[in-house]
Image 1 (cartoon, rainbow, N blue to C red):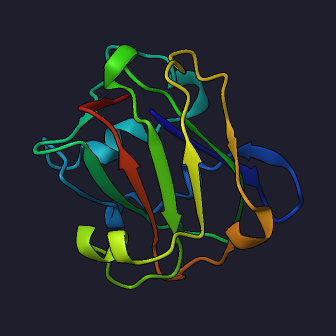
Image 2: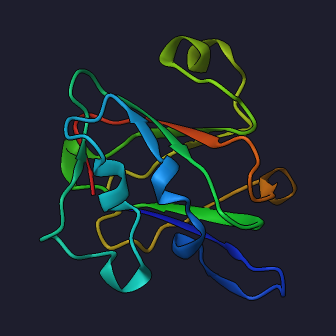
Image 3: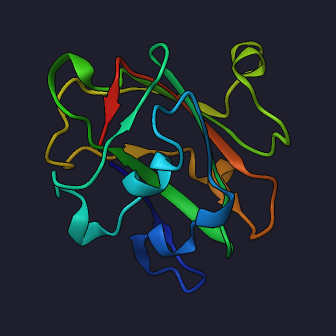
Length: 154
């Protein structure tokens, strides 16, 4: 599961789930088409294990494009993994890249990278962003996140 935390125009902190443009989501290497939409969830569903997972179909990498419908200020990101060796180990964010593929993700310097904890099955670990780099307007070029994981991301 992926939670993107930020604040609205008035400075109120909250989950940015409702501001994700779900019609424009893209995920490369996902095993099941449109499964990225299933793991971007509202806060009250973050630990629901009956909902589908996001799994890689080939190797340990997923490349996700997460566009927004309104201006957002992203303060932190929470990645809830399936536990054990299937948890993501690293995440990188690329902002304002019109076209991203795995080759360009390897050769482009990310805005920020994080080493992820091995066990964040309860969603208590949030990864802070370099806040000034993560203030984006609606309609901006989508934001790409590259996650290195073994297989599953809830």
